[in-house]
Image (tube, rainbow, N blue to C red; front, side):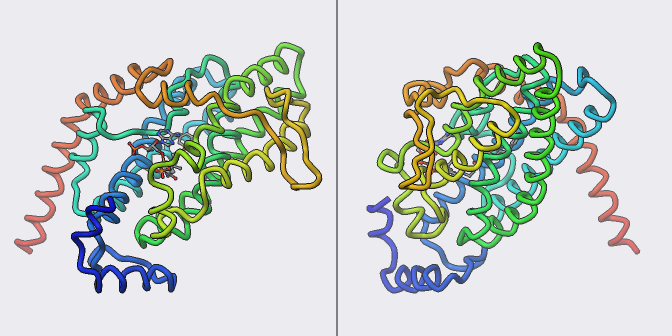
Amino acid sequence: MAHELENEDPIKLAEFQAKIDAEIKIEPKDWMPEAYRQNLIRQISQHAHSEVIGMQPEGNWVSRAPSLRSKKILMAKIQDEAGHGLYLYCAAETLGVSRDQYIQWLHEGKAKYASVFNYPSPTWADMGAIGWLVDGAAIVNQVSLQRTSYGPYARAMVRICMEESFHQRQGYEIMARLMEGSEAQRKMAQDALDRWWWPSLMMFGPHDSDSAHSSQSMKWKIKRESNDDLRQQFIDKTIPQAELIGLKVPDENAKWNAETNHYETSDIDWDEFWNVIKGNGPCNRHRLAHHIKAHKDGEWVRAAAQAFAMKQNNKLKIA
Ligand code: FAQ
């Protein structure tokens, strides 16, 4: 990236940084360094892919939800995630790359999506854990991204955050209700927390010291808070929520430190994190294969929608 910046006009670069420092949003038609554009293309498209692939573990439970109420809520939640994907693809398209290209990069394994969605969801309690923990972690990250320097991304985040807070509550409600239930239901809730706790902490990315993009992204205010700071915020919020309903996070070293005003925890298993990112998690192959198949099966729907839109346009032109 340093090399790419050397090729940029230093005056334009200084003006660009001054705008960022003055908290003026960068808009699609504004001048921007190529490295800024490329970094956003990478992050926003990966974010969009995460929202869409993230529907799969929950989609697994739509037909098996335990009541009509919970089925309706789950369907609405999953539909919201599809909407988040759409806002984010639209924001990413303003950087001059088409949605087809983004999806092709995903299918070719050139673009990533959040590692957390490569874990299975074998029980109903997983729907609770995903809403509470995965959406909960996503909100902490996304609240900070509402202040990101790129206008279309920041604006997409505002609406997404409002919806994610409902998702977090629906997940926590599922867990709380299970914890009021039978011994088997309480065990199911604890088991889901045990399986989703560490993958949720991994959502914030590697430690700051190992984060390839952080320093430049923070300078350009693409990222407003560091991976480790956001992860700590999530830990500090979530452990008391677990305790309130009688759950325990699966970490013997988790304890409150009154001096730092933060929870201390064990370190993440980074081998597992990088292994999942490289494509070797329990569900990586399945998730991607499912997306490729759904995309192919939906080809006729896209063609029909496009033909309809063209017909409407022609009618307008004639009128
Ligand atoms: N998974 O240098 P950094 C949701 C990659 S939305 C996979 O620290 P950066 C809603 C990273 O891309 C959840 N890859 O990277 C929902 C980079 O590789 P690259 C998604 C990861 O970008 C809920 C390399 O490691 N949210 O859940 C991960 O500065 C329920 C080095 O890392 C977002 O995407 C990971 N966890 O910081 C939907 C938020 N972590 O690209 C359905 C926006 C790192 O060079 C159901 N994104 N990597 O090949 C971000 O804030 C940032 O991109 C981070 C990573 C914080 C994720």
